Length: 392
Image 1 (cartoon, one colour):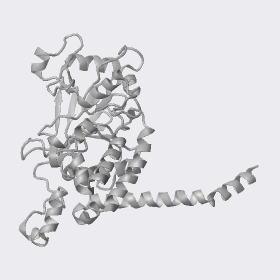
Image 2: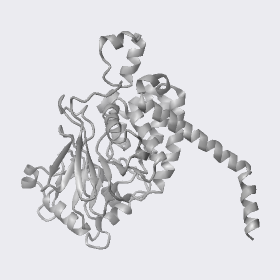
Image 3: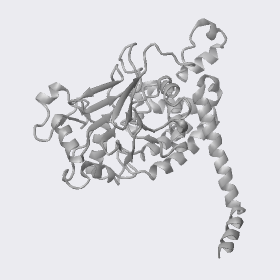
Image 4: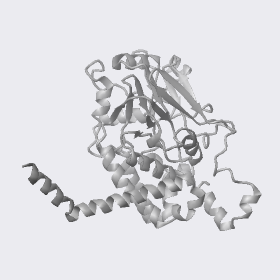
């Protein structure tokens, strides 16, 4: 009876497990608060960033975000308005520019969705801070914030300390928290990366991916086409290196999504296959490039109009290629040899309109550019060293 249902509900709320859930909720809110406060003013939170508490917060945040990502398909579908961001690469300064100018009231109060195309770590000096903030936003707004996977969200790349040195993700984890805890945290974050979606489709018209379009492994004209192939990639995929359960053909699909590039005009003439539209990438290692024919075939087969991807540095922040059908978005202005006037960019997709938003080289953040002698005179040498190590 209705009265019995009411009584049952009342009794359940007093159960000890309900109190556990309440405590867990309070703990999660505390983690999110600490991380968002850190992001708002990282220079004021240096002790926290070097503390065991930050490591514990990242550990707990990882477990919760991992569960959210496991519920998402390998290709997510969403509606505009949507902001699309390219590579972040541990650049807290440019990420804060977007926060100041796009979601200055907070993501929850900003109309539209947020799509990040991958490469959150390596190269920049604030990889842990960027990952912590983006994971916190994903956990807070799971149906509004979408984190796609890039090639740097693989162990072979973000564990390549010999190449990236102090700018590698694994180095920053271990330098911050010690060899044992740092390695454990690096591995836990990579386990979360393993569950990230590979692509997104906006308004059933715009295909978003980190690298590019995958080669077909089945009939591309069959129902679903290449999107079906992406959806069939394992829910947990190491990619580089793959897990034992990953099938070779789907490992190829995932690898193409995170590694491929548009073919240059010279590659179009000399190395792209005329029948398939694909060729070998200059990156080597089995990566591919895709030419005009591959783009035309993919868009026609899927019924899409545009491809938005990241993966390549551009001084203007956004570049257009393949007959204005492929947009490359790069959201960090540093660490890629693009010069002092390089800009970080993103694209706002608003139904039938697309707007490029760029950071001017003249823009100054509220907390990064305090490098004059007066402000430094207030800090000890140890404090200055700690801020340098954190990329501040």
